[in-house]
Amino acid sequence: MSDSHKVDALHPEGVDLDAFSDSSAAESPAREVVFGIPEDEYEFATQIRFELEALTSLLWSPDPTPVIHALVGDYSTRAGGDPTDRIPLAHPLFIHPGHAQIFAIVVDLIDQGAPVSPTIVAAQLPPQHHRLHPILVEIASPRGRGPLPGGVDLPHLARALADSYYRRGYVGLLARMTHIAEAEPTDELSGHWDSLSAAKDLAERRWHGVRDALSLPLTARRQGSPMHDQAEQTLEEDAAAMLRDAGRSWEHIAAELALPTSALARQYAHASDRRANARAHRDQPTLFEESPAPGVT
Image (cartoon, rainbow, N blue to C red):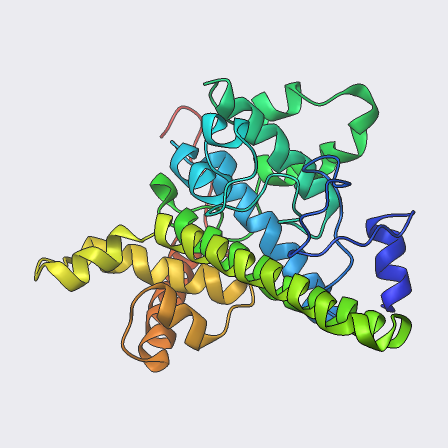
């Protein structure tokens, strides 16, 4: 997949919007991003799949409100302007425009105090957004593991989502400065650099604010209490496997789960795989399994 094909697929008008942009031209949370899109086709597909996994976890979570507030702030905070410790709602948190539009609907529902589910989100879609229905169908009937019970994976996925957004911002910043260096007068370069540096510093404050707000309770329990039972470890093992399936590195997974080494993160994911394989083997009928006689259960 070439870069031009990816841009066409994401936005036919080729609108460029990077994570460090504070431009007032950003019209809505559904604006698409071009800067920072992975060049490798597999990496690009992995990122799109990861976004879908994060949205699936968000829409199936029993209470997505804390994560939404951690990412973009609550309504009262945003009403006073873009917060300095959260990602502005008009910034491109997702590279797939359909994912961004669904996320915007979720934020609006939470602002209204309404419940969130795939069915409720689908009911909010305007008629012209019929192209989003296949995405919602996949969210409603997820493939593979699906979201973890109770939304325990959601803070991990949200942090990874914020990390991807932040990294794309650096790609955009460097691309913009490269253009400035080629096109602007020499005596104006320093001023442009100062302006971009200030935007970079603000983006860093926002990134740290989001990550602090998404502080993980599993991490706190491991660091502050000797009570770390098997049920909690099972949840972390499943979270490690899901983050691996979303394309995260072992080092990233270890950091997200506060594990001391990447090797332990790999062991956690393998333990989850063994349970999944055991369930699949247990639930698969044998080749010569007889059907029960009528009336026999």
